Amino acid sequence: MIDPKPVQPYDARASGTRLATCPDGRSVFKVYFLDIVGRANPELYEWDRCAATRDGFLAALPRVADGVGFVTAFPHVAKVFRFGPHAETVLDVRGLRTSDLSEYPLARGDGTFEFACLAEALIAADECAFWASAVDVAEYLGRWSSFASGRIADPGKLGRYWRSRA
Image 1 (cartoon, rainbow, N blue to C red):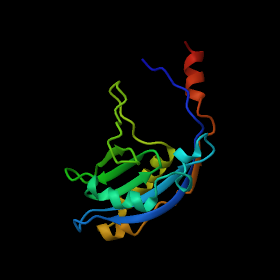
Image 2: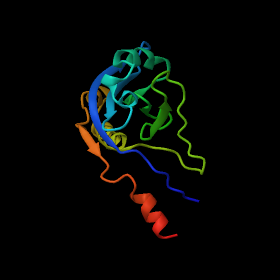
Image 3: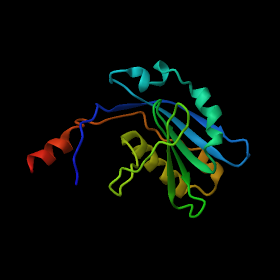
């Protein structure tokens, strides 16, 4: 049964991009660093205010990522999206805690899985389109999403709607 929970405000901003080439010489990921601004405890949600560094994240990434794709990295959570080695027309996703790259569970316990927040979804849409239209991996790697910011106007609308129809 659905039971919407309250959420914090959501105002995501791009905070840099980098290309991460892994030591295996084949694996490469476009990394999108993202912030969520306007929340309490900004050191948890904004790269320039947190203890982690972008360079530290990039240095650790190869131990948990292989293949070709992109990464969305907030200071508190990162997702590795790769074009599936079993079917490259499918986008696989893996959730990680940014601080130590341990698994961040995407299963929600009711048979569903977290796919993406707004920033991740918009970037994923661009990346899938780039992959589909590219004739080779080099062309794909040369294109970057233009995502700059995205705000959820009212992050409580589902809860109000659901409760009003109980």
